[in-house]
Image (tube, rainbow, N blue to C red):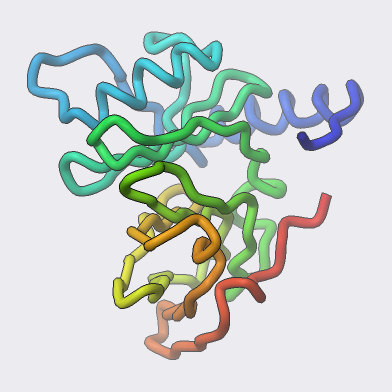
Amino acid sequence: MKARNSRLLAAIATAVTLAAGLGWYAASDHTGSSTASAGATWCSQHLQAAGLDPDHHLTLLTGGSDPSRAEIWSAGVNLQLCVTDGHGAGLTEAVDPAPGGPVSLPGQAVVLDTSGAFGDASVTAYASGFTGADVRDVTVTSAGHAAKALIQNGRWIAWWPVANKKQASDGTVTITMTNGTTKSGPLAKIAPLAS
């Protein structure tokens, strides 16, 4: 669990409110639909169980290829990540607010907020964090799979299949900048978010 104090939480609430007011985050209407994918339905149910109201939140990140899904919902200081394979396995986890909004990170920065794995018979690894404004793509290559990260609102997330949970931090990250230059390195070496 991440330690939080009341002064920090008050500052985060102010920052999230200010960021939303400035348009840094895209609000999304998350009303139910009979055509929702299995992954979207799973995330909606589990994010609601984490205390978020489907009609009163900001969607900071959403996407995936059916039926898998990743979403981050925010209501004040309650920011929750959902990742699911769309076949009944997934997780929800509290995540950190963006460090001062997407413009506060150096342009070529990629930092890690959280990572891990979920599932038993079929295991999925994931990594999520923040990007600077000059980052166009983040790709994780692990266990023979290349997972292109979803990047929205200064956040990134990638998820991919692995043989077991011990392989969750194995792999290589390739970062592509808006000018076309790339850099690569081990997934385990991405700098964590400084608290």
